[in-house]
Amino acid sequence: MKTIWITGSKGQLGTELQLQQEKLQDVRFLFTDIEELDLTNKQAVIDFAQKEKPALIINCAAYTAVDKAEEEFDTAMSINRDVPAHLAEAAKIVLARLIHISTDYVFDGTSCKPYVETDKTNPQSAYGKTKLSGEEVVLTNHENMVIRTSWLYSAHGNNFLKTMLRLGKERDELGVIFDQVGTPTSAADLAAALLEISKQILEGKENAGGIYHFSNEGVCSWYDFARVIMNFDKLNCFIKPITTDEYPLPAKRPFYSVFNKKKIKDSFGITIPHWSQGLAKTYIQLVTSPTNQNSV
Ligand SMILES: NC(=O)c1ccc[n+]([C@@H]2O[C@H](COP(=O)([O-])OP(=O)(O)OC[C@H]3O[C@@H](n4cnc5c(N)ncnc54)[C@H](OP(=O)(O)O)[C@@H]3O)[C@@H](O)[C@H]2O)c1
Image (tube, rainbow, N blue to C red; front, side, top):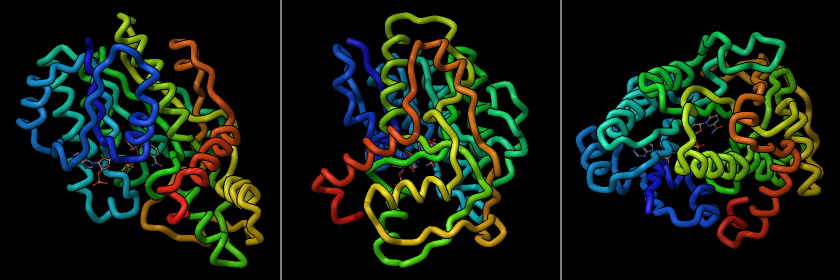
């Protein structure tokens, strides 16, 4: 029986992969987060891989505090560049394939058409720079994959969906940025795609290495996203469109981060739901989960 090792298992994406693991039969899953294994410890990563001999590693572990990374650049680098480097080395030793998750923040957001995988990167934030460095170390082995995603949210952890639902209950009016556009991505939909890709890799799919873009379908601004969230919860909070300048944050975000997803759809024969469908499913998951109700 083949083994898939999933890191960052308590994060948004890692949790979704755990919830959906039964979609793959005859596979042994190993889930680790920092309590089980601190991935910044290179020797520990190699020892773990040699002991467990995974056929595939999916790295969902990351430093994702985008604004804090401006001040904690070295810490962000050690998690977003050195950790994937350790995993790539371990994968090479045990002949495992590696799928590493990256971000739209590797682009500067000045494009006006959906980004393809070969477009020039130009990260504008410390977080984006550390994630690009992570991509580079992973891609030194041409069999490894980097899957970039954008605006990730789920029923678990902290994210825009949960923040909007909380603030929508607390306030009568909320300013939300309308001049940054992209695509919200449900961690559940990304996890489903990752499991399908994993299945094909374990079945022997060749030449799958390289960069891929994955988000849900469609495009919106943070303002549009917030309005749909408020409607789901029938909240009367007025969402006021504001500009990026009116809501200054330490890290610069891309104004345009829409992905062209043709490569991943054609390579693996997957269909991707529209972001509004992903949101509807996640909203139901959130309000029906007893563990989540108090945190909304
Ligand atoms: N969130 C987004 O909006 C977004 C957008 C685009 C791309 N992405 C990318 O998508 C991937 C998944 O994101 P996510 O939102 O699921 O991330 P997340 O919720 O922040 O989860 C990351 C997990 O990695 C763990 N981790 C951090 N340092 C570690 C270490 N040294 N050893 C072991 N585990 C460690 C974290 O633990 P702690 O919580 O204890 O630190 C956390 O459980 C990441 O690569 C991220 O860069 C995210």
